[in-house]
Structure formats: C-alpha cells, structure tokens
Image 1 (cartoon, rainbow over the protein chains, first blue to last red):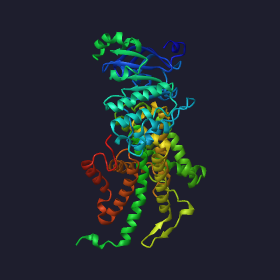
Image 2: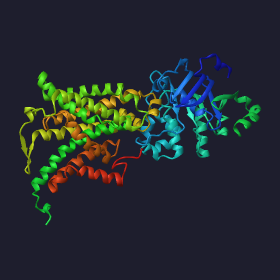
Image 3: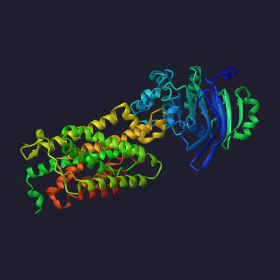
Image 4: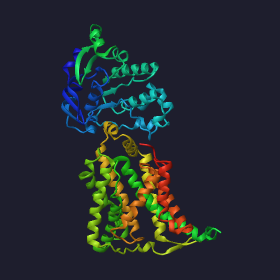
Amino acid sequence: MREYKSSVPALEIEDLQGWYGESHVLHGVNLKVYPGEVVTLLGRNGSGRTSTMRAVMGLIGARKGSIKVNGVETINMPTYKIANLGIGYCPEERAIFSSLSCEENLLLPPKIRGAGKGMSQDEIYEMFPNLQERKHSQGTRLSGGEQQMLAVGRILRTGANLLLLDEISEGLAPVIVQALARMIRTLKEKGYTVVMVEQNFHFAAPLADRLYVMEHGVIVEHFEANELETKMPVLNELLGV
Amino acid sequence: MNPEFFIPIPVLLSQLTLGLVNGAFYAMLSLGLAVIFGLLNVINFAHGALYMLGAVLAWAGMNYFGVGYWTMLLVSPLIVGIIGIIIERLLLHWIYELDHIYGLLLTLGITLVIEGIMRSAYGVSGLPYAAPSELRGATDLGFMFLPNYRAWVLVASITVCLATWFFIEKTKVGSYLRAGTENPKIVESFGVNVPVMITLTYGFGVALAAFAGVLAAPMMQVSPLMGQNLIIIIFAVVVIGGMGSIMGAIVTGLALGVLEGLTKVIYPQASSTVVFLIMAIILLVRPAGLFGRDK
C-alpha cells in the first residue's frame, strides 16, 4: 500500500459537509483513495455512504468542504464536468433506462475526452455474456442481476478510471455476486481505482485494500485490509456483522 | 332516418383531407410540447404565443423588409428558437425543482406579455398574408379541389414530424434526450452536458411552434390571438396522446384533426367540442394517455 501514497490521490475528500434541502447529512467526511486502490465504505443504512458518493458527483442539494479528483478541486463544478475528470458512477438504484434497449443503455455514456481507452464492448460482453444475449431487450425488462451488470458495464467503456460503485451486490443471487467479485478483481488488475459502498461485508472485505466505516455522516474507522482480523470486534460493534 | 346516410362521399373525403391538414398543425405543436415536457418537466403554456410570434415574424419580414415566405420559413423559427433559449436561460431555468404549476404559471405569464405586446402593436384584427406564388391554385383530387398550399402544409409538417421522431428515436443524441427524459441527473453523471441539452431542447421545441406559425400564416389570418385559439386544443391533444410521448403526439394530432373533420360532416355543432369529449373519456379510462407511460 505504501507505494501509492507518494502519488496524487485519485480522490481526496476533506471536511465534506452535505445537505439534502434542510437536512444536514454529511458532517465533515475525510477520505483519500490512491490510484489503483480498491476502497470500501462500510456502514449501516443511513450512515451517509451513498450521500458521500452522490456528493462526489454533485448530486446532492448543497456541499461544502473539498473534493479533489486527481488533484482538481470539484466542489463548485457542475456534475457533467466532474464526470469528465474520469469518474464512472454506478448509482444504487441502477438507473437503467426503460426507453433504451440493453445495448443502447450500454453505449449511452459517451467516451471521456482525454481519458484512457476504456474497455471495448466485446470485453464487457465477455465479462457479462448475459448482456450480449439480451442486447435487444428493453433495458428494464432485464433481470435484477442483468440490470446490475449493465449498470456497471456501461461505465467501463468510457475510459473513466475512478469507479464509484454503490451497493452493486445488493439483492442479487450468490452466483451473480461472485461474478461481480471476479469483475472487481479484473478491474483492479487493469489498474482501475474503485470505491465501493457495501452493505454485504463478506463480499466487500476480501476485495478491499482499505476500508472506511461511516456513522452519522462522518468516518469513524479507517484501516487496511491486513488489519481486518484485529478490527473485527470493532466492526462487530459498528456493523453487527 | 339518420342524416349520415345522405352524406355524399366527396364531401366526406374533402372534410377528412382538410381535417388531416389541421391535424398536421396539432401534431407539430403537440410534438414540441411533448418534447419540452419530457425533458424540462414544464408545461409550456407559451407554445401558442410563440407559434403566433412565428406567424407575425413572417408577416413582419414581408411587410417591413420585403423578405419572402421561403426565407421566413427558416428565419422565423430561428429567431423564435433564440428567444426560446433566452426565456429558458433567464426564467425557466430557476423553476425545474418546483411543482408543475409554477412552470405553467410562468409560461402563462410569458404568453400574456408576448400577446399583449403584439396586441398593442397590431391590434386584434387579422393581418393578411398571401401564400407564395408557387403554391397558389388548387389540384383536382377527383373528390375535391385541394388548395396547393394546404397540400404543401401537410407534406412539410409530416416531414418535420417524422424527422424529429427519427432524430429522437434513432440517433445517439436522441438517446441522450430519451434517457434525460427519464433521469437527467444520471445522464449528467455520465458527463453529458444536460443543462445545455435542456436549453437547446426548449429552443428547438418553440422553433417547431414558430415553423407551424409560418406555415399557418397564409391559411389563417395572422393575428395576436391565433395562438390562444389553438393552444387549448393542443393541450387536449397532448393529454390524449400521453405527455412526453413523441409518436403519441404525432399520431394523436393527425387522428384528432381527421376526427374533427369527420364530426364536421356528421354533426357540425359538435366539431369544436369533440376533442374535449375524447379527452374527458381518455382521462377516465387511461389517465396516462393513449401512448403515455406513468411517470
């Protein structure tokens, strides 16, 4: 892990405050993700993990503090400009478009200018053969697992290097969860930086290089994967795993 | 005996044809409304006023600058499109988060301003506008003499409607528009400049209204009130077809024009009410509209 820390973080959040309308949901979040890392945000429902991701994308009401993407300050940027810094965001609700076919959904996100090449359509189909079989189906007619593959697959094409994956294992059959775990490992080998929000501790823990735990809109614990065992009592208390 | 058994076929066919021409206007205007509602979530009451503005600009071009019909058919939508872009940036832009009623009220206000200005400038009596010389005269269809100008209106508006449909349903930019209609925030999170797309969509939607206005100018009197008379029917068409559906707007517009024509033959007294009767029935049976999806 040490070698990462000399470089500019892919994502650096400092004292992030966030609001949805009147309600204050993030109370000073601090976290850093280095290029090539897989980092997991753990926490109970409502602890602010999804809000943190949405705040990075500029999708919450108001935000204060600092969010740097590859060293560029984004706190005052509109969403589309933040995305064009090389972020691929897979929202919790998947957001598959019903007026588009499976393939149109996959091809919808435009390539990011100046970013890396991204995966080809064939590589994505190779990873998720189901999507190729169903490419002409209406997006929302796919099964839950297929929709999840589609929601993740479509952000791999654009050249985005920092992936924000919100609860991708939620509500899916074990065999699909395993496929997604394989995918995360493949992405790591290819050099992607991944931030995951996960409820499913047993899915997330073996994949992560580092883990953050949130509660009440702040980070309350932070440790590396090899400290996992010694931290289990604390995690038990915080998450009930 | 029912009177409809005495309707001569030529009368029927000619009313249907004229109804189709009217329907083409309904289609073009409701298409613009549907596209705007889809992406902006704004019920654009100003659509009728901007349609009127398109016609008045065509008249003004001819009378003040000697600019002919064909040029104004392009220039007038362009000017109104730019006005639309300014309206969106300056006014509509602020109210997307709010309830539909605010958009409706705001665009109603814009309508009153535009119509008021035109009224004080030109009064309420119509301004005559002649069809271009190439399109004068009529063609014998066997059952009727169809004015060439109306034939042109039919062809031009259906072409524009189909081109718009093709653009939205079959192109890449169109897929951003369709996806944006469902979930603009997520499309923006893919790096698509959704704010600009929204502005251009409003500009395009109202340019379409202005194009219809120029087409209408030689057929009807150009008058500051011409939009008012039409907009209510257009709203009914959009409600029947289903808010936000492109093909729904086109098909419903044409069909209702034809139905109106048919009513003129069978029971003329009902011809101006039939659209609203159908609207009421549709709202009871299928509130989302014939082609609509529940939002």
